[in-house]
Length: 448
Ligand code: GDP
Ligand code: MG
Image (cartoon, rainbow, N blue to C red; front, side):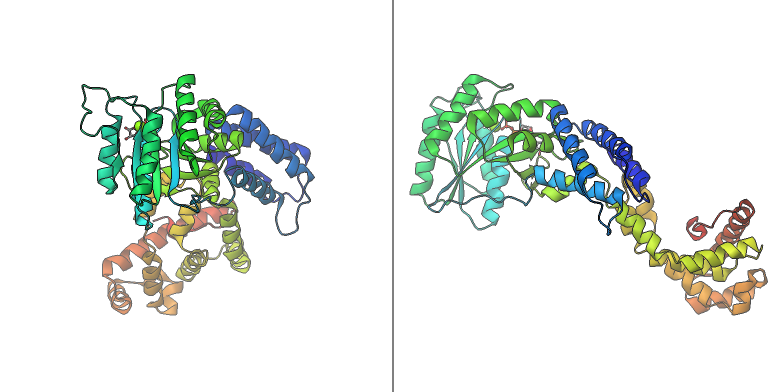
């Protein structure tokens, strides 16, 4: 996957004091492949990687960052920049109503978005109205009316009552849009959302109609709605709408599917227009303000692997690790004291769950993550603390009555003491094997 690939590329860079041109090229190749996998358009990938390469080679490697991190930072910065930098809010008109026009192919999610956007705006204290300027499909008006009803927002539609499934709506969408805005002004709505028609493909007639509506209502925002799953076609579609209606912002719909966000990057890159919102499902509440930095993370989908590794390295006590290594070299026994020390090392590395969620490809580990109980470390600690020093060094002497005493002392059931001793026994065996192999011990306490 994209995440694994980037993570392993970046891992290879880690620890290098200096990046050679070959290092940079190898990394750039991986980034290119990763972005193509994420369905970013080929032309966009080419431009993006060329830019990253140039920066990676020309920039001085700062003392604070290692070269691998430097490249990650460059990639991340570039992604955020292309996606629009800061989150872009809706520009409200000085003299209300603010007019928002929606444009995009049929099925992109415009009518659904109209409902979502109106509900969200209402929640923000606005009093929006929806305008049904899609007269292309027989049920387009009804669909908007249903969404309006769900959102608790009125809908301006042509010839109320005339439309049915069998009868096409008549009327001129440009006139309807203009009348809708007039209605908003008359009824003191401060935001008007104009839903328009799309076609399955880019079509001169449709584009002309959208351009005519734009000219008639003079919108403050023209939002281009695009299906995030569209893939390589995103570029052509976005370019056509950019030329046809000169949109001001992008809404990425159906981001709840498998889409990895490649379309966001393609559209933003070829049009220079910011992505403003994301649609993430069929219900009216599946709507999000788009955050470029979060999307950059999603595209990279690598969590914060480098800081994770660093955190682990920092917390893992060098002295402790060396002490452990020496113990093995000297063929000393791995005791419960050591077991506890290792547990404490793990705790120092921070919340285990948080660490696991920070890891790339953590999806596959989610089940284990759910099963992992951090209180387990607390229980182990309590149990070991309830042992006498002699018991900790020589756990073999812990018989039935000692177990009962330890359980009472640590407030757990005897079976938990038994479980711990059993896990410890396994860990001890594992450590012995590792010692024979000369390896530095891992985290045997977590094996159970
Ligand atoms: P329009 O032709 O551009 O107005 O598109 P619609 O709003 O009618 O949406 C087309 C289809 O996509 C409908 O079945 C919607 O329920 C569905 N849809 C719209 N937005 C989303 C979304 O964010 N996620 C999912 N899963 N489906 C969506
Ligand atoms: Mg529609």
